[in-house]
Length: 55
Image (cartoon, rainbow, N blue to C red; front, side, top):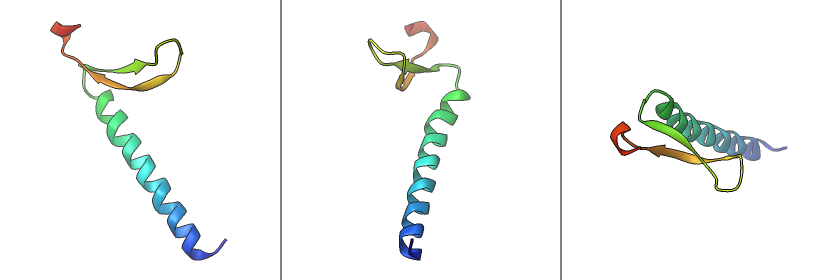
């Protein structure tokens, strides 16, 4: 694999991991945030931010 391809793969991996850590990491520290499940499946679709009064 040439150096240019390795660089692009590294940047892509860094960006993806950074995005996941910001979105899901910030949700883990917020008590009003919870993970949203996909309808009909047992997998995560994203995060949902709702106040305790709205639940």
